[in-house]
Image (cartoon, rainbow, N blue to C red; front, side, top):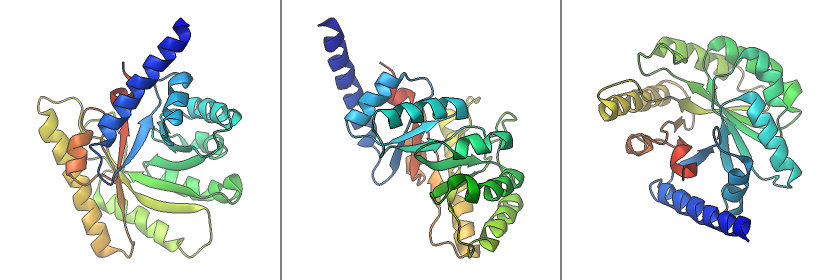
Length: 239
């Protein structure tokens, strides 16, 4: 009886949290970050209708995706959002219901992705974002300059006419964390990415470029600067 009551209370709590965040989104998409959450919470989130989940580690994503698949939840969309090493690509690309990768952070990794995708994905489509570094924090990875981004985009354009499973969706960034001016620095990071998007749309023939930016503490700031995808964990799953 107590377990049923606890489960019902948890379901109410998650429903409240998801509704609260989704009310802020407008047309933006919510990626529910699963990094610190148990599977039972993720299953409850699925039960209330959520389908887009994000994970930071390949091994954890593999485990969670398999658990969802075994439950028969085959319409889930998994977003990989963490640092990605090229030697983990094969493992990542085999994961069931992998929908997008938000963290292609170098030309070398982009080239490896194209090299491995056709065979590994076996006809499945995969969206990806280029991760752009918009703050000066050394621990963050990503394309460091407009020139680097443009070089990667030219690489993508050269392969656009080749039929393959990969589709470039846009740019991802993270706001500055270690700062005394959190809101101001987050806004600066997000505006920098929006400016880059505008420049690219002017200089390349992409139909659209989506922005993945904003996490639990700064997603409202990201939305104010035009984010299309927010990656939120603790605001959803914390009690």
